[in-house]
Picture 1: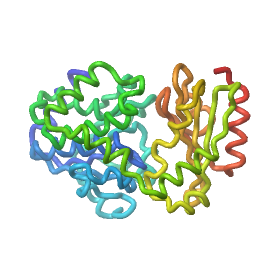
Picture 2 (picture 1 turned 30 degrees about the vertical axis):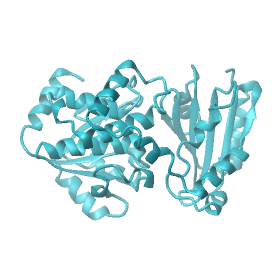
Picture 3 (picture 1 turned 30 degrees about the horizontal axis):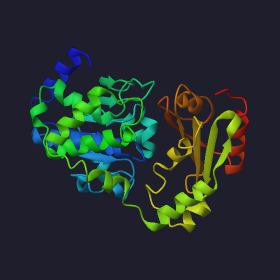
Length: 334
């Protein structure tokens, strides 16, 4: 981050401010860890801070310290809009374009407050006055740690802040398996553990707390898997009917896409999930090695993300979407 930007933000935060903190729609562990970690830091420094999520977050993140204070825009639109309009500063974390907030997009575009973006995705929009954008980081939470350090406030990181940051790094790094994990990532993790993070309990809360119906849904997705061995590709599908039959709740499909890369010699995988309410097929892409799923998602499925992890969407039927994907895969050389 530029030194002059850090100095300007230090000056901004020198006196109490009204601050809104926004994650992307469908917030994951990194988005919630980053927003709540920053929330605790700002409250500790006498600011009036509020986390406003575009929509609800998964139940497996509800244990995060401060999660009970999060306001949900689609449930409390009027009060959330008022908070946003009155905010002196708006932090946008783990996304870099307003459309990633869904229904909040138009509200954010009209705000007069100072925007500060902290994000690790490619091709950021230019809406923010101050931007900390770096695709080399495996998580926004690692950037939040650095941001606090930039402000010379590292001593303010307590167990609550550390727990939130740890959670985001753990989830977005694929439990430290993804390429963005560096030696410095592990040094930060070690410091967070020294601050009291329950590093043996958090993975259980995140990954080993499934309902029976979620495991059945995972089983159905695996049953639906198809493999193109000659193209080193796999994919899975879940229809709305299948989701409903296994009592789907938000978060139940989290991480399922990664199973497609666990097969020997597979380097590209996807999952297609039908959402009848929104009239779309939600898509997650994963890869390992040099195949850029961010570019693939941008080029073909109205999406984007990281080189090895991206998302997209389709507004045609599941059958048409999958057929398009298969046709594209047959042209790939992986």
